[in-house]
Length: 444
Ligand code: NAD
Image 1 (cartoon, helix red, strand yellow):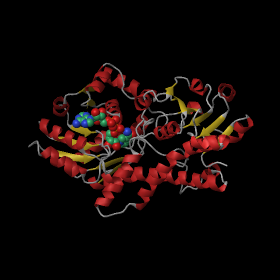
Image 2 (image 1 turned 30 degrees about the horizontal axis):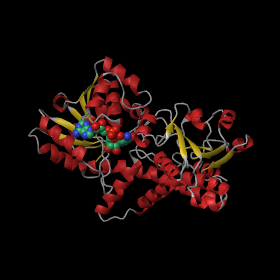
Image 3 (image 1 turned 30 degrees about the vertical axis):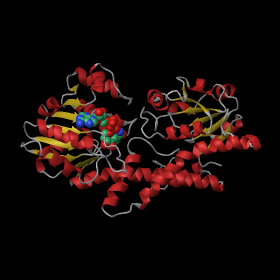
Image 4 (image 1 turned 180 degrees about the vertical axis):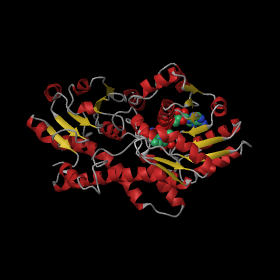
């Protein structure tokens, strides 16, 4: 099939590449000329495991190309995906200016029947707005489909190629057939294509993200309670997870959820609900718990050092003045360079406010972190270098390569071996045996 993708970000680029890999002719279009220039010169502007190789292969087979030319993207395609951003507006609702802007442009260049497929995460009712925006610019016939995306950054290719399910909101038999044909190669293992009405498809995406965010806030709240009661969340988590009704997924305590989806999608759903007179109480609590969770690690660090230096003089100065804290992990989760809404930003800012010097390391997110922190923190290509003369290490993102470090080397580099494990990646008994002072989330 001839396909164009409007918006070549994390979702658009992965979608376009995977659809090319299954034999379609795909044009990825973006208004960001720099991004398209990079892609055309063979550089992938984001970090996503496996993506670069797949792009190269499909470009070399002439199935995948990149452009800033909307007219070309629309005219040469039968299926047009909208995969632009839907950032939160001031009141938390999804800002649809990019989606509607793209829809108007699509309408402007339509030269024959097209299917416009919305992949961006958008509030219920947006398909109607897209339909009106396109119709306002063309006399051509077209259909609008809702096809929300469930991929996870860091495992995006695998998720797109082998989805748990494909959700498609359609209202015409012609588009139903086309969409089934398009996705057939991705569901050969028997996973379902769920056909439903457009509004339900739009809502499914928000309900799914809200459920996952709720699980995270739930286990984080349990961790805070465990810490207060002298129970260990790691034991509790296992005790819960073996219950098949509960399961282990998304049941790991941490420093709060971040990224470009959960925070904005929970906010947007609260806002949409309120427009229909529903006070989304569970979701508001999920958000509040998440905001609180982002302060737990830095409070623990401040408490540790305040109790060590408490005297009259120390009460008047910043609690971490003169201390150096090493931070491992900056991206909002492992295997991505995405710094959007990363809890590391909240944590590091509060360490800086408390007077600490911060030395940080991340395997791939340091360029993004540099743009955010400028020269307020030091960044190190080598995680061990960040530990040199540090008073403590804070684990913020659970990259696999942090899980089994050389603890003896760490001890030698640090002023004192103190670890604040924001993701519970270390065995606390082992670390204590090695002479570390260890703090975890919700652990004894
Ligand atoms: P992104 O910011 O990485 O990419 C969006 C791209 O759209 C940008 O490159 C931007 O320049 C481009 N753009 C904006 N207006 C345009 C226009 N008129 N024409 C062409 N291009 C335009 O965003 P993303 O992370 O890929 O997310 C896109 C959508 O997918 C959002 O609604 C998001 O909620 C949803 N989503 C994201 C993920 C994820 O993990 N990132 C997962 C599932 C769904």
